[in-house]
Image (cartoon, rainbow, N blue to C red; front, side):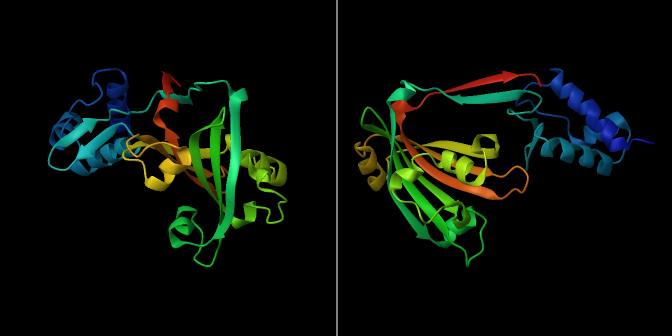
Amino acid sequence: MTIPKYQLIKKDLKQQITSGIFENGDKFYTESELTELFKVSSITVIRALNDLEKEGFLVREQGRGTFVSRARKEKLVHFSDIELFPLSNDQVEVLSIKRGNQAKFLEKLNLPANSSYYCIERIRKNKNTPYIYHETYLPEQYVNPHYTELSYYNSIYQRFKSDYNIHMNEENFTETNEIKFPTPNEKAKKLQISLNEPTIFQIKVTKHKDTQQILEYVESYKKWDFYKIKLTSQNP
């Protein structure tokens, strides 16, 4: 079976990137340089470049050119949230559980307009000091409306496991973190901090790895002095 020319070019260019000929952020070959180098049409070159861009090896900027991605693949990067205190001191309080159907959150959960969700509002504390405020949005099907007390949802992941046989820590998720300053007034009150203190705003979306259904959409505000992360990388 003949391998398409663009795939051979892609393989060659990928090897140049991963071998260190190009460093992260370096300007890459132009399309004209590649057509001359490989003696092929511009269509073949563009197809190879498009694949490398999709796979995260290249970044193409209008008017500037093509660059090696600073976050290129070929290494596994592990993210860990470093706990700054013993987990035995951790406490969770469920503040409210409310059914809703706001368009904004239906869209986040990829639910139709006639659906509903539940928002579970929680505060996490360390020795009675609030340090994370969570708003967790769940599709209606994953909340038992007959819970007897709010504490039933102290651990949402335990509920997924016990009630629906879904192990959330094994499902796929994306998480983004950004600094919020000033902290929104309502959230600052929940965390018992002044408006002059920053917080880390985290958004987490978890999907079922088989069905791709969104299982949760979470917005969290974390006190800045309780936030520390570690990144490690290794070759796959």
